[in-house]
Image 1 (cartoon, helix red, strand yellow):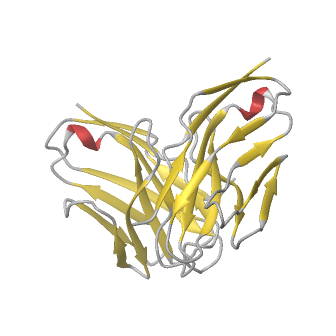
Image 2: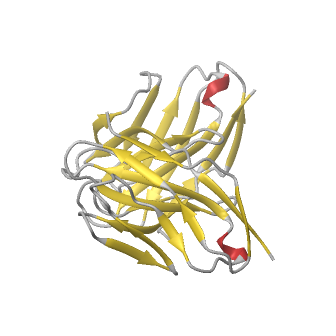
Length: 113
Length: 115
């Protein structure tokens, strides 16, 4: 079945550092790919998404590019802030739109001033 | 603000009891999904309701059941609670009336603790 693998956390960075969180997936066909963020004590919020190969999703300084050849959707940000501290989840849904979201285990990011 | 609300925020139950969790969506879409997020894990799909009928289920036993009402609010019921049912329960509603490729808006969740 479909699956998502994320890099293990926690990740601790200093403010203004560069962030990469790796995500790879296994799926048949051409899934849609998502990054969700969960701030402490809150539910999930969609951060960005991409629905086809070579698409780049971006939001709030975060970016991720749908790489079909490497089945990857790595999350990047050029300069993190303390307010970016949260848990980040990579997820996919198949292209039919009829299967539920499949999530990775999440990567906890802590940014220190 | 996602427009999806859940209640209660926290709940403590003992093993063997039954629990009902609630969800409502301002969007009024006729699809709602429920997920279980165990500590340190990603959310796992429990089931989806579409127009008041169950329309897909993940790998969860029948003691997990749900209801969807004409006003698009929804309930998740869990019978015979087990310790492993302790988790954050999330409901989600799509941004449009479409399927899972639409943006899913999640509620803040209900934290269930089973003692």
